[in-house]
Every structure is written in C-alpha cells, then in structure tokens.
Length: 337
Ligand code: NAD
Ligand code: TYD
Image (cartoon, rainbow, N blue to C red; front, side):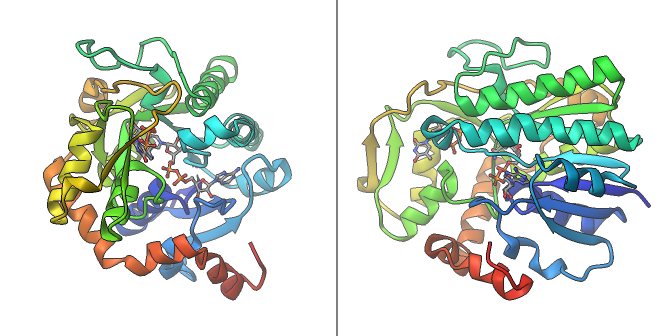
C-alpha cells in the first residue's frame, strides 16, 4: 500500500481528490492542511477514524512538521495554496509564503526523505497568462507569462519544481488545470458565489463587460487527471487539463439564472478586476495521449449537478457565510482554529 501526503486536502479540489482516492484506491492518505479561511474540516468529517485517512493541521512551510510527516511517505500531491486572484491583488504576501516558500519546503523534505515519488504539483492555466480571441489554446511548452500575484506565485512554484527535477532528479510532475467548478467550492469564486447570491436574491457582480473567457472543467475530471498523473506520469512531465468548454462569464451567469429560474435583473456590472486576464483555453492533447485521460462531464450536466449540490447543502455554505464551521474544529479537536 502506498502512503500519499496530500496537502490542502480540506480545500475545494483537495476534498474532492481525497474522496476519490478513498473510494477508488487503497492508498494511505495523510492530509496536511492549515485550515485557512478556505479549508473546511467539515468537508471530510465523515472519514475521521477511517483506517487509511489521517488529518494533520499544519502549514506546508513548517519545515519541522513537514520533515516529520514526510518520513515513510511515497508520493506527494500538493494542492495547498492561496488560490484567489482578488485576494492576491489585495495582499500578495500570503501567496508568496504558501505557494512559493511552502512548495520549496515540501520539495526539500521530499528529497531528504528519499521518497520514491512522484511529487505531483497541482498548478493552473493562469501561469501562461492571457490569450487573445483567436489564439490557439495553451500548450505545456508555452512561455509562462503570469499577470496576477496569484498566478505569478504559482508560476514561481512550478519553476521551483522544475528546478528540483533538473538539479536533483526528483520525480516531480506538474499538472496545470483550467477553472474548476463543482461541490465544496468556497463561495468567493465565480460559480458558487453566483449560485449562492442567486438563491438569496442578491446582486450578481460581473467584472467589466462580462466577456472574459474561462475554460470550465468539472472538479472530478480534474481529480481524475491528477490521479492519472500520480499513477502514470513520466518524472519531469507537465500536463495540461482542460474541460474543452470555453464560456464568457456572462454565459456562465446566465446559465445559473436560467437553472434557478431567476431574471437577468439580478446581474450587476461592476468595476473590472485590475490586470483581468481576457481568455484562458487549454490544449490537453498530451494528457489525453500519455495518461489516457479526458474530461467526462459536459458543462450542461456539470453545472446542473453543481447547482443541485448547493441547493442540497445549504447548511454547508450558510455555516461558511456565518463563520460557524470554525466551531466544528473546536468541538472535534478541542481547540480553536
Ligand atoms: P482552495 O483555496 O479551495 O483550498 C486551498 C487549501 O489549501 C485550503 O484547504 C487551505 O486551508 C489550504 N492551505 C492554504 N495555505 C496552506 C498552507 N500554508 N499550508 C497548508 N495548507 C494550506 O483551493 P482549490 O481551489 O482547492 O485549489 C487547489 C489547488 O489547485 C491550488 O494549488 C490551486 O492553485 C490549484 N488550481 C485551482 C483551480 C481552481 O479552479 N480552483 C484551477 C487550477 C489549479
Ligand atoms: P474566479 O472564480 O475568481 O477565478 P479566476 O480569476 O481564477 O479565473 O473568476 C472567474 C471569472 O469570473 C474571472 O474572469 C473573474 C470573474 N468574476 C466576476 O466577474 N465576478 C466575481 O464576483 C468573481 C469572483 C469573478
């Protein structure tokens, strides 16, 4: 049985990934998560006491803790990050601490422990920058041209991973994915924010003209890609994962309004995000060819499934909005967050 250190497992994608692993594999999982505002211990609460799952509260940049946890670990999947562009514009420092320094601490500990690997570093299409309307989708060998403090910190961590592979021969694999949506996404990102605002009859703030384009992928498809990278990738490889689904923000929001039977008067165009990337699109040919991976969920069914999840789990997001999920940690672990 393999022992996998998953970082950031209480966040959106990490939660979905750990659920997938526990359902479909017999790996032993250590979930290291700092439980920042975006990490929710409730997400995996039902697995407490599971013989193959252990949660450790801590930071990836904590060298001593990471050094201890890495002993006996075969592989790492690094999801832990500060992940929201708007927050990075307000304050870049936490992004540098976690995304850059934290990744290096993990790489150093991985090397010291002599783990067999791989070290899968989960990154984003945003490292490539912004595409013009007719440009071909991003490929793995495109230049890195990040435009936000968030994407610059992710690009930095990708380069540290590359350096670890080139300099020390560490079996590092980098995955870069487009915009995810699905269950457990923190309601600051476009899709959950719009669903929840819609359900509360609140305004739906669209930045600029609403014509910025993102490529949307259902979170489980991304998780299956990361799992394929963990099990099949060549050391040193980089893989793009995309949903083959380019939509303007306005199209996304109008779809949500339609599903929930609400009118367009809820839409409010607001001041644009500084440095707002116009378009992302991914060429996932390499992952399709080498990993046998392809996205399974189309947007039409994925967005309906997602809206259903937020309708069925109103307690989950209500507790986030009111900060109550923090009490859960206190009750279960006997100390405050
Ligand atoms: P998220 O913000 O929902 O979750 C991040 C998790 O990391 C949280 O549980 C948080 O508590 C934890 N964390 C933050 N700082 C930490 C630290 N210093 N030490 C330990 N844990 C820490 O993010 P997400 O959307 O699940 O994204 C996960 C990863 O996937 C990130 O690396 C992100 O860059 C990448 N990614 C996300 C998307 C997307 O659309 N959400 C797309 C491509 C790539
Ligand atoms: P977001 O979910 O923050 O992801 P990212 O910036 O990493 O792509 O935003 C997705 C798109 O939606 C992006 O073009 C910004 C836009 N957006 C809005 O128009 N309004 C909002 O309130 C938010 C959060 C995002």
